[in-house]
Length: 195
Image (cartoon, rainbow, N blue to C red; front, side, top):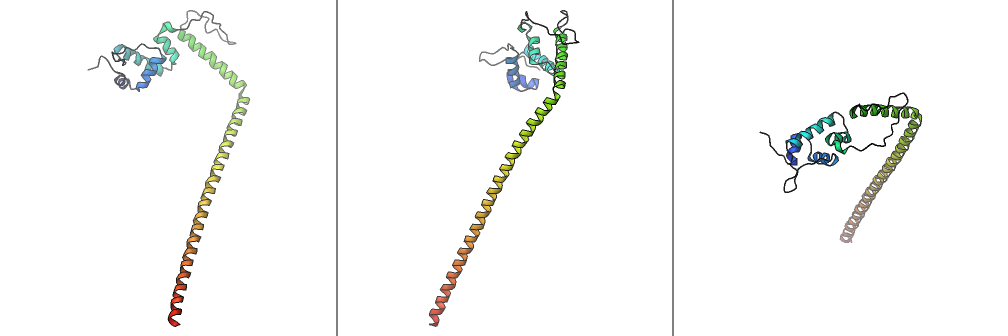
């Protein structure tokens, strides 16, 4: 038996997402989610269906802006003074006023993809050189850091080894001094007995 209304934790479980995802979508998509007298979000069948639809759109690859337009078409920005820049060799993405916004978006993405591809192709040597230089600098800095860290660790280890050797030498000297003192005491006792 399905619940009629869900609190956010139950709605999140039902949709197999975290609660913060629902709050994020509510804020980013300007959704009007009803609340109870205590101010807690209450999700009814309408809201649950909307979230399922949002999840489907996300799986289809739509951005949050595109989903926002689908959820709230009246929130679409006004484009009175929009200038269309036509990419050479392409039909204008906005030329057909009867084309749907989805078709226009697909055309726009294709044009933008070609522009980016051409820009990358035209500047690939410079980009490669710049990337190589940046990576090289980063690797050199990282190696310097690791080398210094190793030197410091080695120096610390040598200090500890030196302290251990000194402690051992001091212990041996003290043991030898104690042995000498003991030998002297024995010799004094023997000398007193003989003399």
